Image (cartoon, rainbow, N blue to C red):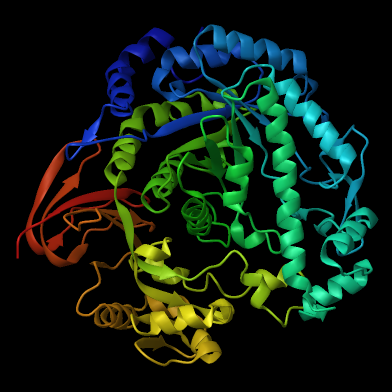
Length: 612
């Protein structure tokens, strides 16, 4: 058999055999970096439909490393979506058995859970979600209904009996974004339950008005009570699903596919509660973070490569902990190789590691377009060839903490907005107005405890607790004019401009002013400063003792970076990592010229601190 565009299987397999061995070896538990054991190997997992198993088997022969960590089967049982063969349970069962017989680790993603939207037609009968807008969904379920929970119990029990290593809850596990419903659920049963639990009995319109106006009723702050109600509802549903799975086999891992945290509004994820409620007998829970899907045609859009990876970074930072494995979701939207290049796909996977700190990636691309994705110049072959690079990147951050500037964000940021006209507007507080700073190389950490400075932007500053803000004022705070208007500019603060951060920061004079101010706030020098004329993002990871540092540089430009200069806060010996895995010395000191970084590509610099 021949895969379209890639020659014979034997020929392709021979050509890539050496790379396959290197890729698999570099992902193993025994690999070392700086003599430290790698305890969390990088994972690459393909998400597929259970169709055309012969093509998957052929691809496994040609690209063994691309499937070494297993596959995720996307199910659509109970849905009227796509051709019947992707919804047929018996076909899915046969596919699982066939893969497992060949030694392939199989995971299952149950699509959908609560329901994405009404054009994903459900065939099951249970109460449907009602929005704050008064609209009732035709397909999306009320996640609190007993009938729906019983249905989920049956569905997940059925799939758990197929023996997957991981069973995933789909990314519709949320209260928001279920068209035509805006936010749910405001059905009669949910209103009655909210009244019983909070002591506040209100009609749908009255409840919506109370949330928008931040009203207190009978001594209860309605916004806070509604947040708790929504979060607990998701946790309860997760518990129903986890119990169903673990009654069948308590070794099976429950995975959550989590979307953009800024889009959840009044139902932000309570990651700790989800972990506690869903962990298996070994205390393990997996997450698969994603946020929209973009194409090469609009890389800087509101849901583009940076917006998506910032959201993923926030989720990884919020969910990481003992027993947690954080993966990410990459999509060649709309499941078409022509709309997203392999270079951009690889850059995004590298951003997942270097910016977000993820443990691996899943690729949601092998659906009805297998011929396109199994070419030598497409997804599976590309990941097979470049798997070793991602392995090395993940190994390099093991045991290190991400340092730099912390752009303030809180999952309950919507609680601070008292002037919204709709529930959707409540999360739009300018929390991402600072993104242009990332393009000029300001190093960000999404882990506040490891930050050097605090960054505030726009009206998001309203949500900072006063005691936290006062403490940061003594350490260093950077604000735009809009944030300063909200909280002032006392203490150790630098304010740039009169309004929110904008593209004006990309002007050379402005970018230098901002970086100079960051250096002053840090008491002389930020941990790492990068200067160049192209759009270049930076992420810095350092050992707790400060002796070793890894810097990721991401060229987010259409031009190559040829003038990159790094300046550090101490004296280091520096090396640059090549694609083949070899290290090239950059020299010793506090300033370094970095070799050319191609457009839309990552670069990795390793540093060892020298005695002063």
